[in-house]
Length: 358
Ligand code: EPU
Image 1 (cartoon, protein in one colour):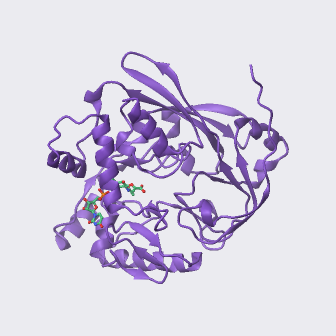
Image 2 (tube, rainbow, N blue to C red):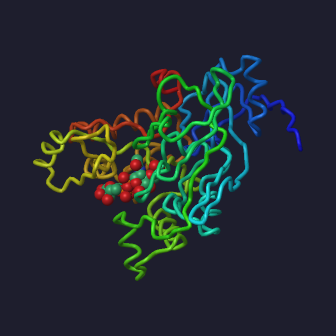
Image 3 (tube, rainbow, N blue to C red):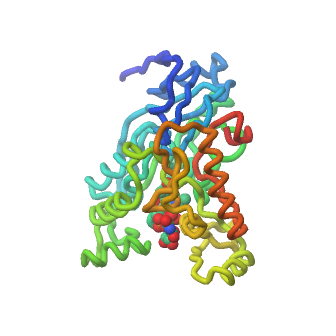
């Protein structure tokens, strides 16, 4: 048996520009990589987690709008393995630092179904449960079984099941309250039964129909999702962005009826959460487009011309400018519809954002 030795992390000052996909200039005064879960207990014993480090995957949903006052800890643990297999399904355990899209691509190559609709979602496996990533009618919670996490409060490991994760729309236990958990690995259940695949999301259905595919397999869905996403979402390596910048707001039926009387073409979807009975979800992209911000640029930031929900950074700008830009866009939507947009991304910046979000 190999015994992993607790490796001392590498502490240093680090520019964060290349560590978050929005690419704003920021510097961490202390930065280190976690390659193995065996590094965690020794750090905890030294009292290191009392300093509430910012946990970072690939930084595709985190924006550093100022220099973080806390240490930054990049989760870089690797490994994918099948931890259980039956005739109809497999359970896959993936380490938190694995790239999400690579996990999807691996699953599709094995012909395992369940996450192909989540292809090309940027970020790591460990970040996936935090906001319960979702696309094209599927959410992580549909395939999730459990995860292993380290308590930064108590210095112990725990297996956390689906119920305890309290998954909702872009939300989970890990987004609320005092941050306690550092996610080490995630286990998902994938199917070998291709009748269970999900292809009813409208843009996906239309795309498959055009190709004449009636019963899509795992590979067909994967290819379709990749091409739809590539056609309307900018590649962060070319044009820095974080995917959807705002959440789709969930509003009461009463407000919806009021808005609909003024904007009869306003789309709405089921809120999809048992806590949101009597509510509907409105596509924020539609609201932003109607408010005149689709494809509009101001200084270094703009709302993408192909998809109004994606805030893009043309380069060279800072957090203050981003904040002002966000205020303009959300202000325009609020004025027109009386609906307040909330960021979907995690904004880190001690001077601008309330401390609960940093
Ligand atoms: N729309 C517009 N104008 C636009 C963009 C969208 O009017 O410029 C309207 C259209 O009515 C369209 C509707 O918004 O039918 C929904 O658009 P889309 O299918 O692109 O989905 P979305 O609600 O904007 C969500 C996720 C995406 C995910 C897609 C596909 C959120 C915040 N975003 O976007 O996730 O890829 O569904 O399922 O829930 C991400 O989280 O970063 C992300 C990209």
